[in-house]
Image 1 (tube, helix red, strand yellow):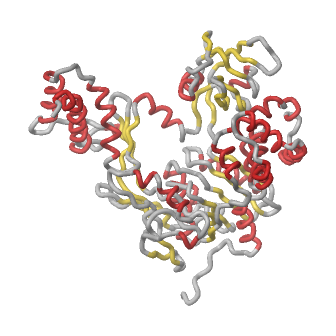
Image 2 (tube, rainbow, N blue to C red):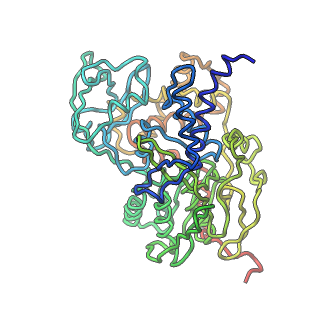
Image 3 (tube, rainbow, N blue to C red):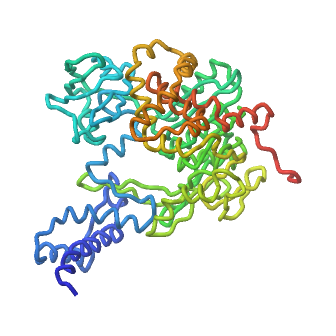
Length: 544
């Protein structure tokens, strides 16, 4: 046996043992305010002794902090797929994702050719007030060049975000100008919206797209519903496709708006967490409106809580494909150094008793991470019959059969649309060339495109510009060989993808959603349900 090889792994293995003992073998939360983890000595003091042995006697100097940082994620990975460690430097960014706002300059940007390109400017935000416009290239920050390999997403966010009322001086290159102009921006609160689209699908049907369940989702929902009320909506579609979840409280508040009094929305239960029920208070203003909820394999956690509550209470028709299956409850626990863990303490259950969480093997998340690919390969995205229900049957409020075993299976299945799909289209989309072309086209034609204020007008204009042919030339120059036969077969898909990104660049996410929904088969199915007065599920035949 090679002693040097053994010594090389010794500190890591010892640190792993130390951290495992600390996390699993200590008391926390109930002993100290603020939910901070406090490490106490065991009666034998073995952990302290082991730390001293490594620190005092190991052959080489050991950076214990570094070993701990590396060991923590691996230890938590041995528990379940959703217990995670977040380093101190990443905690702020992690928490910001679900906040109603963050402090920054107020731009959406993309990084192309090692340079920040401003894609959109938040209306009435600090950057817009200071004079930044979409299309500007940020090449200097606080007097220092900011181009080249140093320009990463993380570093750009670090330089542009910051404390409210602090200043940042940026240098921008504007289209048609050769000289850098310098702009000083005072950072401010930038609102983060969790609802990305609210509009009328037709004269009677309102549509709301929810990206995630953040702390401001419920107030945003009420604003969206008020907006649709002014348009006279009598049916409602709530789109939760690709909504990865967020705060339980937001999902419960939202469900409360649509359910009658004293209905169970969800309950949680764990080894050390007694069952906790979440019920409605009967104050919801939209308890009787016909409702359809859209889900797919990207809908997870709080999305599944809402969809499951609507399904098990027979309140709405669920349309789409089976949801992700994330039903583990995480509790944030902070460390004194600013880092934190999110530790799974319970599971979510729908009103009928179904556990939302899909199966996983403790300590081995390879199959778990590959689950969506496995579903795709088994044909689940294309045929309802390919869905494998691994859990027992349960019953909704009126006796309909629903299944456990992970995720929410829709009442009406709509397969993934593969019409016109070719290898050329897949390469174009996955390579990022479509996004790159759309941005270049937008930048080169921004003055003309800015004249369009309505989505349909811009859409009609883009059709006349034959953007697909222009993209094919661009892609050919950037390594994707032109395939005329495949391009003809995928023409509609390519045009939708290309033009939707240009519309997003010039307008906003609301316009983008409205554009891509025009020919969406899931939206068409929802409208069919409303036309046939079938939004409210019917009691199974033979049930009393």
